[in-house]
Structure formats: C-alpha cells, structure tokens
Amino acid sequence: MKKTLIAYFTRTGITKKLAENTAKQTGADLFAIEPVKEYSSSYLICVGQAKLENLQNARPAMKAKPQNLQDYDTIVVMFPIWWFTCPNIILT
Ligand SMILES: Cc1cc2nc3c(=O)[nH]c(=O)nc-3n(C[C@H](O)[C@H](O)[C@H](O)COP(=O)(O)O)c2cc1C
Image (cartoon, rainbow, N blue to C red):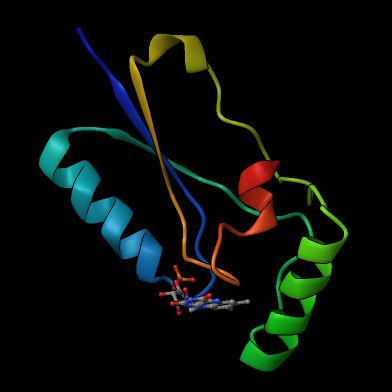
C-alpha cells in the first residue's frame, strides 16, 4: 500500500494545523521537524535568528529524524516562508 509522510516545521502553529488537516484528509503520517535550539517566541528576535542562519547557510540540529523513510512513496515537506524561502532547518 502506498504511504505518504508529511514532515512539517512550525513556529507558531499555523503549519501544524495545515499539516494535521492534510493528514486527516489523506491518511498520511505526520512528523514534526523540531529544532534542538528553539526559536524565540518574539517575532523580531526570531527574524534576526533566521536571517543569521540564512547568511551563515546554517543547518540547525533537529531533535529527531523520521524513522523508516524507505516505507514512504511520497514525502511532503511543509513549512512557513522565512525571508522569502524555507527556514534553514528544512535544509537540515
Ligand atoms: C523569521 C521569519 C521570517 C518570515 N518571512 C516571511 C516572508 O518572507 N514572507 C512571508 O510572507 N511571511 C514571512 N513570515 C511569516 C510566516 O511565514 C507566517 O507567519 C507563517 O504563517 C508562520 O507559520 P507557523 O505558525 O507554522 O510558524 C516570516 C516569519 C518569520 C518568523
């Protein structure tokens, strides 16, 4: 049977809601991409953190990696737009 994984990153919960709704409608599995070092809850501080990661081409560490990726036919990655592109943890 074909399986789909939705791997998502969220900071304020909007992408999480979208990922959960999509998983509910499609039967996909969910995986939350979580940074070891949390981003600030202050928007302005987070904007600075994100810009720095961008400039440094950083690969922020993830708390965990998804297991058994080989079981999936399709992997969907969901994330908020940060500085016109993906947050650097998506590159990780
Ligand atoms: C660091 C940072 C950079 C952002 N850059 C953009 C951007 O370039 N364009 C945009 O439309 N929104 C930008 N946003 C807004 C987020 O994409 C938007 O609030 C998103 O819905 C948050 O999703 P989340 O709740 O899953 O974290 C930025 C937000 C942050 C924190």
